[in-house]
Length: 217
Image 1 (cartoon, rainbow, N blue to C red):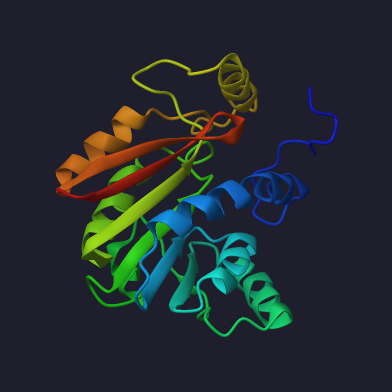
Image 2 (cartoon, one colour; image 1 turned 45 degrees about the vertical axis):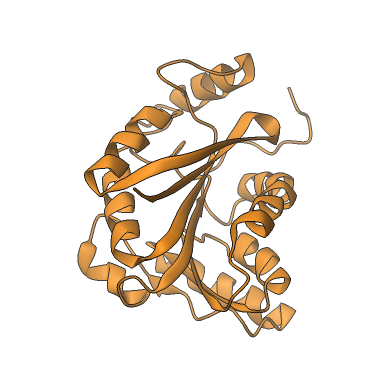
């Protein structure tokens, strides 16, 4: 057991989420440095939460304009506070975007206006059914050559890739919340297929996580 880990709490402003974000931001930055375009463009984050990731990444990509979004408007003040504190001028105001409500997707921008969309550590505490909305949203908002990056721990074809991921899954399930638990990459691939997207890369990340890169076929 990691004694430095705060108690499990999926709330975006919790100590646990801050701890997890601090562990994964450097490896994720490395992936974004490889994948994001060199030319100017727009990047959308789904489920931005506290805003810690978008505010960490943005200064490394001055040519890109970052757009935070979340279903829960209660986190917007924290996102704006971080952006103002750091003086980042390439982060837009956060917008309300609910993956289960297509009418909210255009709050982020026009169709095919984003070079990339990313979503971090959502599926272990969200129902797998939101994969359908996420893929449809991405298919609508991504430019033709754009990509969707989904980061987190997953099962692969019905199996846990490590004992620690199985233990994490069991810890999540023990909380008694029906949607908590590690989802399967196969289910995300099925949702992507319906929208003309496919899994382009499955990148192994530290702490037994994955970066899943989806794009148009």
